[in-house]
Length: 263
Image 1 (cartoon, one colour):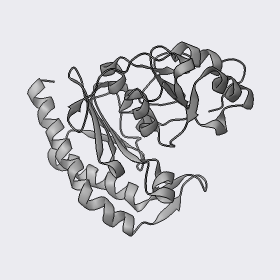
Image 2 (cartoon, rainbow, N blue to C red; image 1 turned 90 degrees about the vertical axis):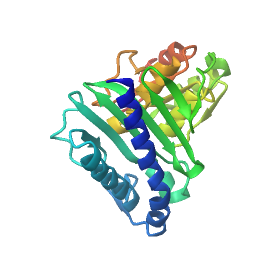
Image 3 (cartoon, one colour; image 1 turned 45 degrees about the horizontal axis):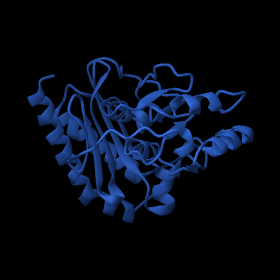
Image 4 (cartoon, rainbow, N blue to C red; image 1 turned 30 degrees about the vertical axis):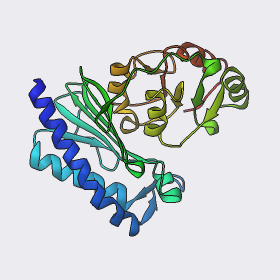
């Protein structure tokens, strides 16, 4: 894709994201919450309305583009062919419902299976993170620098303790500087992207949870792999780590010692 086309699409997406500043407060004030697979798997009118709004945006401005997203059937979409947007309309829905904070919107734009534009919009804090293939990563238009290497012993790490066995949790805590978990794959990943965390691990992410992180990782020199240190398939998701270069191998060694995690 030509640079001019990429810039035009980026400007268009930025304009669309700006419209959410007027939409989201009203949606939250009238929030309706339901469950999907279990009582902890929540969905709200906010998730649904944002996704529907973006779907209408694509139909109007980019009708040849496809949407692969959390709150729809994706059977008709081949995420590795053509122009595809992968979306989590609200990443961290439980945080939205319980805290009205620590949630974000994730968007990744892929052409023939390659990431070219990525967005993680931390709406509550007004922080828009984006990556543009070949042009780096930004927060609110200001360039992000590649994080400095952090050894595991000096790094704060992030993971879901409910799916890591006790022995592995102890090993991770002993090997690292500290532990935090925000509860939003996008925002936990942003802490790695900014160099605040050394690594974030998620053992059961869906494609929309990780769609944006691929481009941030490649533009900023981070490691993003499966927990077996193989290439991660963006179209299927699965256990993954996004990590500072210096603590990636140490994290995987601990996670793969015995039955360290469950999907």
